[in-house]
Image (tube, rainbow, N blue to C red; front, side, top):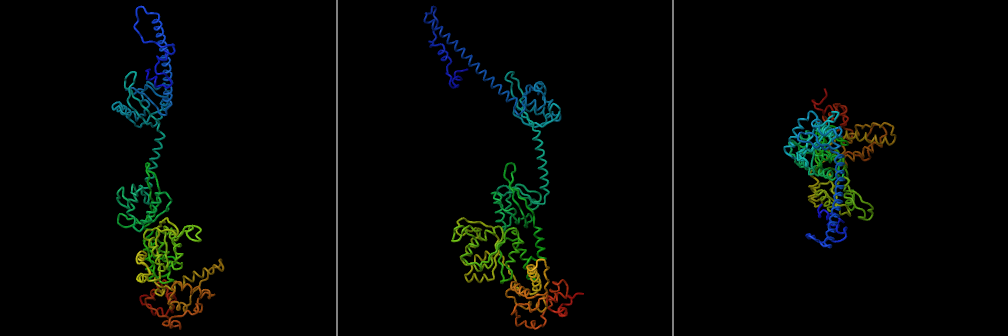
Length: 639
């Protein structure tokens, strides 16, 4: 024990001799050489110095006993930790014979601790792994570095278990010989869980690989990390870090970007998003996808599960083109062309301008485009721009914040915000003021707007469909409509034919409207009563065919509603039509009871529409069967 060691202990004097002198009571003088005859004073000093040395030796003994006690206590703690450690520790000699083992090692091997020393460890190694044990032990002695591996050990009853071993070569400080220090732990349960996990991963991998849905793993930048076989067949040999969003159809990109941003930020977002993705063949596939955040090896990934609805969309369009669109009745070539255009535009997320006279059903067409497209699950919001004063229209379109004007007692969402993710239909868009046209143009260009009285921009993703009965090109030339807005809203113009240009559809329309109105009126009167079947007299149909219908479908609906109220039976006659329902002068021959003129072409169309029944075809045209046969070409007559 050095003086430095003593000085390191707080509260202890640094010099034992100083303490010894204090105990001996006095200060010893420096040693001097003894003379042959010391004086009494010198003898006294020598005796005192001997006393000091004796006290100093006693204090050193006390310090040694204290240090020895601390060392034994520390050694006891070490052996306690050594024995109770959760890892088994073994010390082996160069031949692999156990020299020392802790209590945990004996417990793991299922033997008494005292029985382990003197046994070769190979006795506790599973037979199939003994050769591996010898090879590993030789490697540890050769390299002298820490080596870790996994193998099976056996318990006393012969039951094997998986263990993780760590070994390194050391030296016995007593004998100086090289020894083998080894630590091992029971990983049997971990191994079982790992095996079960591997089996589950393989099972899920097979399921995902064989799934018909497309599965992608993306990183936070949207780059592809992995995809299943179905997805690979669509995108081909895509680069491992390709940005898949570059394959999205430009018209669908804003909608997909919104869904991807919502998925990354974790704010809910849409459950599903429908869009088109460019495939390996250059064409586009219609997909319906969901985004889910997962963790792979501690890193965030996004799993995109997509259903290929391309064929379903094609079949839906084909079926709709055959049976027509709900609410749209007609077999006239112009109407069939209109239905085909609606089905084509449904999947194209571009602005559509619907042109047509009042009463032709422009909102019905807009609703059909929305319903048949990928935004069908979201709102279809319609607003008539000509029916709302300009001072209120801005609030209706964009909403307002509380307190923005007198009477604004709460925040209100505008039509654009209500239509987010869906479609907004602006009817009579030609009635907008120039000031409102500027604000609308900003929404279409930037996708953002500000509520009345608000300062925070609101971002929306909507499809715009607008309609008008005005000639907007003429309005542009007259400076009543902005040219830039016109080109924004009329990417695809769609014109609805007036009723007078599709007279062959009038019998079908009359039948449809009468059935619908009769069902509604009878249900109001007596819900339990079956609706009556009302037919139209030949003379009545002739008058309806001869009318010019300036109000189009809406006018036809009003005329038939009036007639249905007047008609108490099941046959609608001319007397049930509204007063003053006149026929143009050039068609007075029909009003006098003369048979209406028909052409061979109209006779053939009527026969096709009647399913090949001449009587029904003649009734639809308002002529007799003989007249019908006279105008029917020979090749069109039934055999």
